[in-house]
Image (cartoon, rainbow, N blue to C red):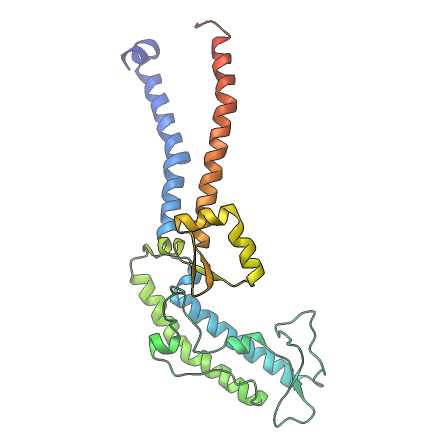
Length: 264
């Protein structure tokens, strides 16, 4: 430091140190803090309010589609698979009480239910708006008439709105940081497969390695894999291999370039 001050002066050395500090903050510290902030906050789709909001949107979409179908001059014999909010099934469904009327399968009506599940540990008992918040069991009956289905969907939306307002307020006042995201890294997923496929998968070397380190195991005859952790391990492994390859290739070149000229 004394040599730098003697050579360049206090002002230039101070400016240089400040530039290095700003560079470190902008390119190293701030990105790391941003990544840590995102890692400690649950994704929006995992919030309870997001689940309830989705139920309300599905119920409103269900009502809109049903009203459009009800008010159509002539109900089509088969649903249009090229667009729209209705998701056609393998056929059409006759609606009781409406002569010569058919109603396509509507995905949003099927999902408009107080029994929609919250995002929780897949190995734990599933929790719904009914079990967690005490709402009554409400859903859209596909066998009911269009008018009855509209009333049922509106009831689902109406009973979920106060809960959504309460959850939004509770989440706004709660500490936003949690370690639950790291728990999802170790979560397991069941991978159903035929006996032939399972035999092929078990014979692969990489899967044998996963079995040894606990990334893959079998329970009740079903193969379970820690998919997120496997992805993380593979990413770290390939990053280490790329770093090692760069070191092996670049270091000898840099070393020879450094010796190719005089010390001055």
